[in-house]
Image 1 (cartoon, rainbow, N blue to C red):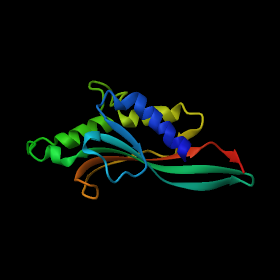
Image 2: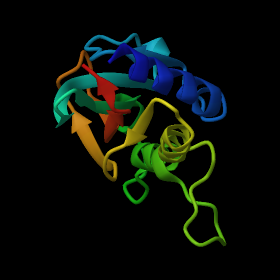
Image 3: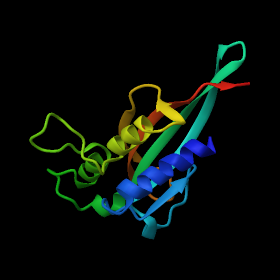
Length: 159
């Protein structure tokens, strides 16, 4: 599991962190994040399913959440007509190039993950990713979050 999390960390650090203003990328489910580290990304490995392919071969299927976290308190006084926090999350997660056929920008998380898995020799995406936008009160302070859930498989290997 560490190999795929490290691969995602490398991809996001190279493509998303600096251009999108992300201050920190964490591995694991982080409950307490310093305010100075927001906006942040958390790569949280949820689990591994081991699937038997043949008598002597297995495939590991990984469930991973990539979470972009904003401090909701920064948006309490925002305009009632513009969801600035959610707009930021939508842009960093899945912003499209205007005037194209719905093509993702290269510095979005969704494009980075898809491209990184497409060119990977070790892992491939199992199914289409899922993105949820949430208001979370389970952290040290209220947050607005975008959660990209992906399932990836390793290449077939011998037991």
